[in-house]
Length: 466
Image (tube, rainbow, N blue to C red; front, top):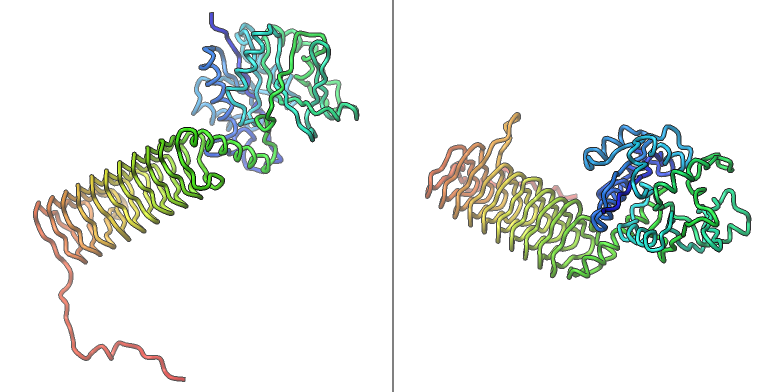
């Protein structure tokens, strides 16, 4: 029989100290929001341990914004409303009141929305202890040599209790084992003990920590690394957790065979996939759901967002990819910009100061420098000269340029879309193509040159001598 768990995400906080124009759960973290991380790890925890149950976010401050964000991404998450922030026990009461079926689940997991480094691994260790020792409740703890702000763990012969810093004595404040705010509890146990929790403390709040008591069948699982449980209450802590998450990602990628020139200056988001043999230079940003193949070279300053780069491609310095697709052995850059919809074929070459938008380039096509290609299809092995522009916008609508294979487009040429150039065509330099060209045709539209000998002196300006 599968275990059932109610996972409670405490997401009612305001986050004043973050000084952001957003409720705390929606504070940015890498390319996501803080609340994304616990929801994702809960799902991994469920999958890893073959659990079923209910995921519920307890919301409060700007609840509509938080619920809208979560609902779009995680439709299986339910909601409970904490009308006033009166402590974690009050939040849990709101959770149980929101859905009677939560009372019947085997276990209740409580996790804070502002602890993005907590992973499935910590949750699984807590479950293993809970089951192996047949405990009623487990709290995750850690050692902190300067434990200011944390609740202290007071261990007894059996069980333990937690004293919040405001209520602690001077001797208790010297204790370095502290509460992380992450709990896994038998549902029957928490329901029974939640009844007796009161607000008789210096904060006037209902502490969930009060359900842990000496003499009861509860345990504190002390983890070796406290940075896993770092909560985000200000911008400094937000930067710290982002640094930790990126460092974890770098370790994983390096173990998978990705080489970094300087990993301290590589910025790679959590869901990015990179194949073995790929080389990452410093100051590279790879974000979103980007997928990088094997043996790719990504040079310094490149920015890649929500893009796919296939095996053996090369992304040269200071190139930007956004929702682009780069096929095998293509070369992009330096200083190129691939905008959404850019689909660059195998062995194609995009050079410096080239911008591609919503266009497909077939195998071996070349746009080597100083060009704009938008809403276009360019055929195999076609060569586009310097300064080429697809004039795709008429002021109201976008139109398509189609260029066939094995064609040559001279420098400083333009196509006035909609227009089609066939296979094996030649467009002379400085030509504006306004009409369709059949296969094998030649086009030239530059003006006739007139030369007047000796006339240059009328136009050349000479500086007057002082």
